[in-house]
Length: 288
Image 1 (tube, rainbow, N blue to C red):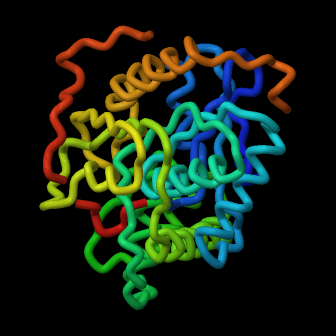
Image 2 (cartoon, rainbow, N blue to C red):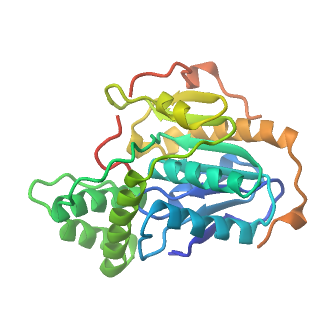
Image 3 (cartoon, rainbow, N blue to C red):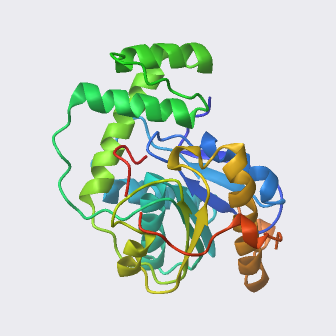
């Protein structure tokens, strides 16, 4: 499995590349299911380094350098699922501070941090939570066996995924560091419109995607997808999410042109597929 920081899912094709930021697991493979919906567009994923960044600012600086090495000039297009949405928002703000144009930003069931210091880590319960999250990101449904610990989850995941237990344990450590970094950081302000796709089968109390409005100088377009947070990258939800992203990216394409030399190395949606009304929503404990 490729664990490089830049994971190219498709390098050929035409148009502005889409950069997808990893969820809490640190891996970008979960976005591969989007490829059939995105035409010939190049798609790259940002993956977490095995040694967790000391804070979100350091992570963003690393990803900015990685993106600009692959695509030196804008416009840029970004998206992220769960914790990846918060990181994508921070990267988009960083690109704008550098004077670059960000033409597209999509957040998939992601919510802004309040900047609060993370609670003390309960090492075993947190590792178990993140081991199960990692199993989901790798396409394996984690069983909720009473009394099961993280070691057993990772051992079973190693058998199913073909990855070593050592690598999987390192990924869990990375996820712990990434979650702490994201939670400590207050979001900046993104100057532009943002698309938010919300998992409608979640109960989140008073927290809604509209919380992003404090961190966006532009229009927030909220769409609801009939799924759970953990299922957003599965085939059923992707059959709705993929066409939405394709349609919105095609609108950006109509306003944006990029030559292939600048890059290195409207699908129709039925109204019944998407509910536009935002509903009160909360980040699950383990938002990825």
